[in-house]
Image (tube, rainbow, N blue to C red):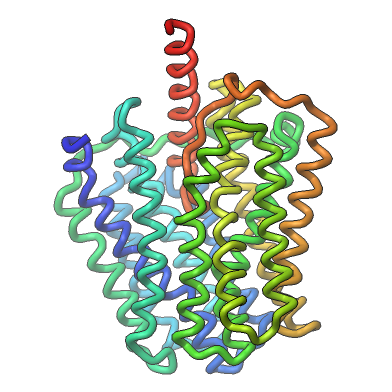
Length: 421
């Protein structure tokens, strides 16, 4: 393992810096948008713009990498992203921000595809699970750390935007200076939505709804905080709690995932999310309870994403997994575009605490649909399911496919070991 991590340390370090910059800009949008007087609906459109770009990048960047190589794609996309971050405080208009966010989302998606191709190639079947887990942890720690950096400056100036741009620019130095040749990114053609729904209805519906939850939390959390009069430090803590919860709850949920009917766990996690959203809505103005609600509502979101991927793999052949992974990433992206739009409209019509109503209602819909699916299909025996791997929602199809392949191989190895034993 030491040898494996020695070959990917630069990538992991670079990812932390990228996520510091990207995490800062996500929260800065809400902070600066409030200062500029943007409405919740306008900021919702800006938020959705990122996921429009991200979804486009996931589809187009593998072709770019095949044509010019991942090093050039890294450098080009990094330059565009850094420039877009600096331009945000210079062009304080909702439509300009939407265009810039589309650019940032596209660049981030391409960066993920290139980075994950390298990561996947540097791993073996025996080490892939640990390497991918380290990669996911690096992403989450970067986002959490970004919220602390926001407390060091004033969102009303350009300083924090420049800082985010600098972090993104710095992130490519360790990657590009130590990069080794890797095969061009290969991503399977996504499975059609109808075919995906027929094979995995719970995952298809659930991951679409979860896309809305994740985008609302990451993009509209700062908008909510600004709307209710939180200070910049409080907003940074609020957003950090959304992701800190995911870091803490990923492992206990993953442990349970390999030992029980995953539909029951999906129901339980979604119900917990809905319950804490109700807490956030019902106790207006109680800062401690808002932070607690953020910790648990955000904490179940990332594990639910990994649960849906694992549950899908349980019912598919190894040949269908790559295409299904691409289909689920696309479905998640569509939900991520729609979610902030619905939330922004609700906050505009019913006040800022509609943020919790939309989140809670979406979690509730996931829980109810999981209950319904329990009546439509028998549960697989636990020893016939694939292993769980904590994939984060920001992962590209490359990492999702690699995680699915690892999970299937790991489960097969465990079954073979049991039979030999």
